[in-house]
Image 1 (cartoon, rainbow, N blue to C red):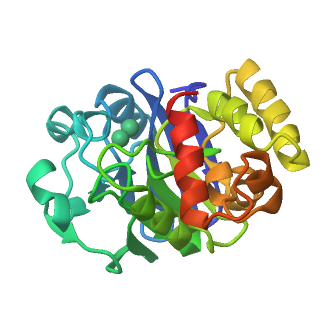
Image 2 (tube, protein in one colour):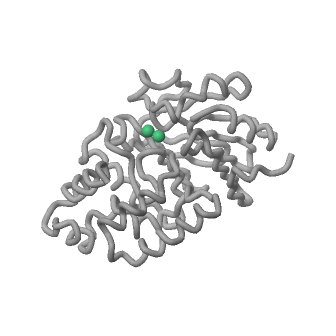
Length: 267
Ligand code: ZN
Ligand code: FE
């Protein structure tokens, strides 16, 4: 079969990362360890595009990783499992709201996908029990609706303190880490980011780049951690320029985060 123009792939000698658009603006991901041939699926918004991609590549799923309980990240699982079942990994703390888990995970847990080490991080805030998966050897982190491209998830369940603490756990990831987040929200996130951080040169350039990428119908996800650190307002609560722009030069980082999040909710 010809390659699907609606899917984007990053391939190296050691691993392959496939970004699959689902529903109206969700992303699911396939991560393959090329040494073992083991494949993980991260989130299951809907079955059809994922099944099509697995079949096209002739890949067999080894593991399914769930980030959080929202329907747009798990609802495709029953349909997918009819043809591509695999052990399901998710947060132990949220097990009652997730599909049946074969592996119940907690913050700090590690496991392997073939020869790749995977670290589990509790990143509560958007929901309580949201987890992220960091795969250092693949330079990839699956953050869904916690850290997002130029944004972070809305606080449906957690407090500003929780989300700020979660983002602090992610901010030290290496520059070349690919942030695999759950939605294509980046263009609207850029407009908001410019409203609180208008003098940020890196942000202004990124906003232009995003418009160009979207005009070509390409994805802004995954994004680079170096770029998130330089331009994502939710990672820049300690930046003097951003703080001055929103009139909170003397506030704590958490107070700045809470204010930026509040402004985003009504932007
Ligand atoms: Zn969500
Ligand atoms: Fe979502």
